[in-house]
Length: 402
Image (cartoon, rainbow, N blue to C red; front, side, top):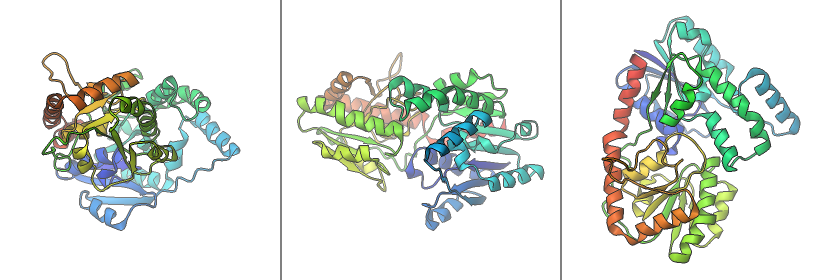
């Protein structure tokens, strides 16, 4: 089958996390079984070696420049909002849009070059024309609902701009409802997102395919390091991760250190924001930027804490922590889409949402080596059974072929 994959984000290396991890691993599997063309963009920080490496996993790599030049003056903001109101397309989607990519895709459809188009992340939906649904299979792989994310940020007080987002919220709902009507199939990562998208009554089927883990990269740790060392990781320029890191460093950690004075926290991830960098001034906190491999840091941690208060979709950081055997304490958002206990389900992680709940759960793990071993084994077993990329990519292939 001839597949055209659209990804505004350059999906390599997958160690960058987020969108790259999901897109690359699905691409890698599909390339072994189909003729795949990937259209993506270079924002200027992509190295020639990375382009060469990605080329090995795709039949045809079509690379366009990406500018994302967004002016921040008040008149520019008013202009962007006006376009959003009139056209129904969010500013971040318009800022990455390329007329040259549109022409390339239009020509490919006109000549019948492809059997199916996949949009790897909803931001790529802008290139799909509604009338194509009757000519070619069109799939959008939604990593998380933008409407629900905005709604949650407003509800939890984690929005960067409450006034703007209250205006944007109904527009985002309209936007998500409109673009969901264009596709033959819609893929989401959790049942929660599936329920949200189904409320829009899309004509296509909605599938739930979570994220996965590369077990060769995220190896199971050989020993429990013990100690009282916490880790949190992810892209540290992303609002949901910034909020979680600050919540952990400024509210949870001080309370925990009153009971366990030797507790340390290591924050790992690319492009740490000023708010995250400032956490390194607090006792026991170390902030590290992008690293070649997060696995060694997970192996050294006593507990992985994932105190997400916003951000929807299944979390790679939760799956990857479990894969390495690092015990997890996480919020409802951090555990979205993952069953951690219940009838015939062994305990796989501890849930916490308030400061006191985090302190209690982490303290339990500090004090109980047997409980740490239980979560370590059960977490790894879960990933091996349900969250390997080969298994999940086969499900994605089924969507494309059906």
